[in-house]
Length: 208
Length: 179
Image (tube, rainbow over all chains, first blue to last red; front, side):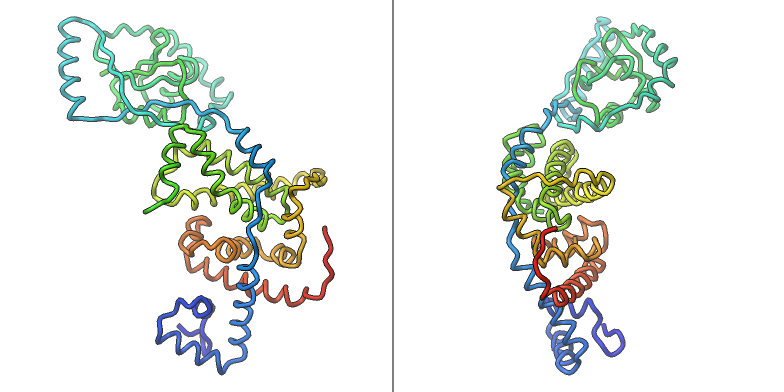
């Protein structure tokens, strides 16, 4: 690709880097040989390349490396729902029957862990204040549903605050003791909503 | 994509600090070089690299295998270096030198003619030539790190090298002076 009579800058760079295919390379070489402007341009590219590539790596000061390692905060392990339909579906079906027959709330623990950035979730004070009323509602609601529930994971925070957070995401979340129970939601979607929260004492369950 | 860091990254994602320390060992000097050459100060570079590793550690669970770990890490480092530059502009009082005898080599390198020429380049050109020529990254990797098409990366390298050569030519006789 010529820009007027001269090769364009990408061609000249490719020529210096020996990235041009043979026919093109020969054409550019022929042009450069007879064109002082392009020869100067190639010369500058080669000079700068030579200088830059001869510079050594700079060593990170040992004190800085030590500071990096000393400053790493702990990342609490997180549990993550992993659907395994072949295994989980029959178990859920059996559990549902059992729950109906016996009236016992059955909890299923899920395997799987994921580390998450602890700092990712940080509800603002303004949000917390503006949602105070909803918080009272969420916190005061006693859910006596006796049905199949899925314990997704336990997260950091206060039950009421976690319930509020989920309600803001559009879930029907209520507090039952120290548990947050989410009704009628897809567990995967709830998990994604909780993905940024560190592990903690508040248990989150999904109920049909 | 075959990533030589993958086994360590996988362990570090599960919270294994030892694995992350190995990744720090593996990448620290290249990251420091990137930050130092783009910022022009070993002290600012050390701060930026520390910040970059901290950010990487915290964000590691969200790292996905779509790209090389090193590409992802360099990108974080570039962002940290950019933030460090803004911070330095906002807090000039922090320009007080912090003497550290271990920094002698870096100090010497960064007070030379080449660094003065690099400092005079547009930041996008400087980043491109440092990544390509000093650290040996590919066009595709640089494009991913900087969020621009490969053609733009090549253009920046062309212009960065061209300006650098001109600057080196005009400063060749200038006496060394530490700033």
